[in-house]
Amino acid sequence: MATNFLMHEKIWFDKFKYDDAERKFYEQMNGPVAGSSRQENGASVILRDIARARENIQKSLAGSSGPGASSGPSGDHSELVTRIASLEVENQSLRGVVQDLQQAVSKLEARLSALEKSSPAHRATTPQTQHVSPMRQVEPPSRKAATATEDDEDDDIDLFGSDEEEDKEATRLREERLRQYAEKKAKKPALVAKSSILLDVKPWDDETDMAQLEACVRSVQLDGLVWGSSKLVPVGYGIRKLQIQCVVEDDKVGTDQLEEEITKFEEHVQSVDIAAFNKI
Image (cartoon, rainbow, N blue to C red; front, side, top):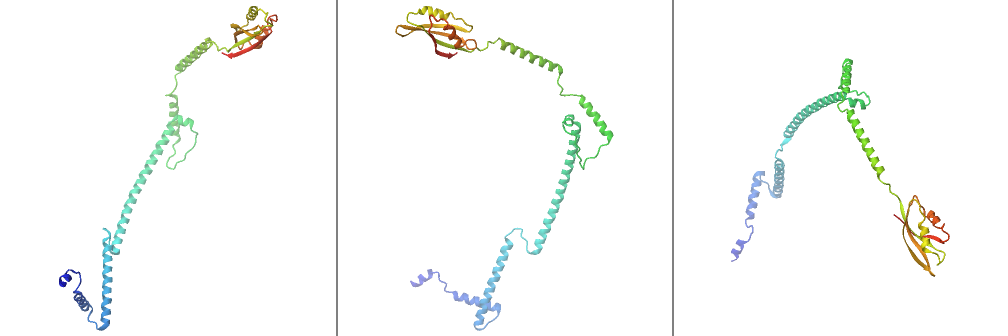
C-alpha cells in the first residue's frame, strides 16, 4: 500500500546517481582533483561553463535578431560601402533634375520677355524700367528699331475699338428716354398738402340769426378753400353755435387768414375757434 503511494509521488529518488555521473564527467574534462580543492574546482568549472553558455546564447540571439544583420566589422564595412554607392547614384540623378529645371526656367524667362515686348497695352501702362538679367543678351540697335516699327503697326490696328456710329445711336436713345421721362414727370400732378379743419363759430346771443351767420361764413371765398357740411350745436341758455367743416390747401390758405376773414362779420360773429385740425 505504501509502495503504491510512493510510486505516484514525484520524488527524485535517483538524484545521487546523476550527481555522481556529472562529477565524473567534469573530472574527466578537468583532470582528477584531491580533497576539498577538488570540489571547489568542480564548482568553479561549472560556473565558467554556465557563463560561457550564456555568452554563446546571447551572441546567437543577437545575431538572429535582424534578418539582414552582418557578423563582424567586415559586414558593417560592406553595408557602409553599399549605402555610399546608393547615395552617389541618387546625387547624380538630383543634379540632372536641377539642370533640367534651370533650363526650363531660362526658357520661361525668354518667352515672358518676348510677350512683354509684343504687348502694346502692357508697354503703355507699365513704367519704363530696365531689368538686367544674367541670362539675357543685349539686342542690337537694328533689331530694336525693327521691333519698334512693328509695335507702331500693331497700335494702328485697334481690335477692341468702339464703333462711332453705335456710340452716337446709344447717345441719341439715352437722350430720347430722358426727355420722355421728364415729360411724363411734368404731366403727373404734384402732390398738394391739404388739411381738414372743423370751425366753431359762436354768435353774440340767442337772438342772432344763425342762418344768416352761416351764409356770411360761406360767403368767404379763397383760392384753395372748400366749405363742407355744417350743423348747429347748443351751447347753453338757448344759445347755439355753428360748427362747419372746410378743406384748405396748406400752401394757399392759413388758419389765421381764415379766422380773420370770418371775424369781419362783427354783427353776427363773436369768435371763431378751431375744434379739430387734421392733415389729409
